[in-house]
Image (cartoon, rainbow, N blue to C red):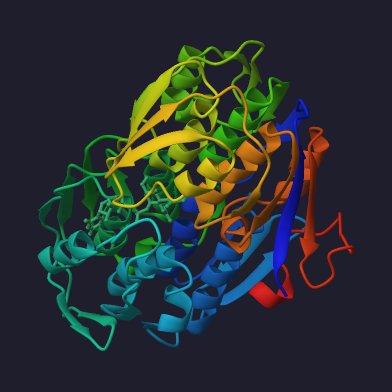
Length: 441
Ligand code: EPU
């Protein structure tokens, strides 16, 4: 059974969108819950395939989990872990599950976690994660596709990251919480998801300082200091940015609610530069609109607080119809222009050389049959299809389901003509379907 999305574009989007909990935060909080020998409850948990995979990973390790989809909460009881092995079958489906490595090393002093390998957008190495754990006294071997990590005891140390890697910062933080003494991470990632993880760990009884800056200091605590907590996940800044882009792309006007606008500053400032109007309504919502043709823009993706790589493809969709020539440079991943050939099918004029894309804005895009290659490339095709007159079909939407809760429902609420359908029964369109179908879990 292949699910696809059909979009009839050319409609102005109007209304309000409420943003869900952040995928890239909640997955790490779920792993962090393994550190406490008691029950943790997380709120604002989006219903996404990646969340389900992480629940499966936690269950594989012996944690008891309960997912309340109505309340959007998860209860994780990690009192008795029965294993330290996260299987290839699960980790290969969702590389963020590699973050259980740090939590297991911290809690059990041992972990066997499948190496996630590369993915569509790049090589995505984990050498900094491993070097960081070694600095804390862990012996790490790679055998048969698995990372085997073991430590007699963890001792804090100084770690300098060559790149402010989000995942490496998180894995090291998780292991360091229960190390003896202090761990200092220099050139640490500063993303809001790192701050959320630090706040969560501190609520559990950990001692983490400096998250959100380039230097994080973790003073080790004892296992008995850690306890389960109730905690609400931060809003998804990338989902927020995606809906902001959609309103602007369709010359519409809308309110994006339940967000932390400060997490989006770099993106919204570029949108404003292109000609969009963005107003802060209150501390958790913005109003976005655009009346005129957008102007071209130059973008270089950078670690937070720079321009987010996860919104690069969205900005490119806008640039395809902007006035003038835009240059986009992707500096984090080797292969994050997978949307380019698909956008070209719609009439976009894009010249790509290695990690640079030169986009000459055209008057409008045309509809086409499209294929999502990864999560964010897929989301940019949704934006492009919403702009193009006529019917576009997007295939491989399981990629998009990894990061956007109730995508069609949210877009329909703001006036989009979008439906999900099963390719085997093209006329049977289930308009009320959620993101998660049994076949994908
Ligand atoms: N890198 C290394 N060695 C390492 C770790 C990273 O060379 O040991 C390189 C990577 O290959 C990559 C760069 O450093 O080129 C940045 O990787 P980072 O570790 O920061 O990214 P990540 O933790 O794997 C998270 C998000 C990504 C987001 C990036 C950057 C999650 C689950 N994923 O990935 O989100 O693009 O940070 O902000 O948190 C997405 O949501 O679509 C997504 C890909």
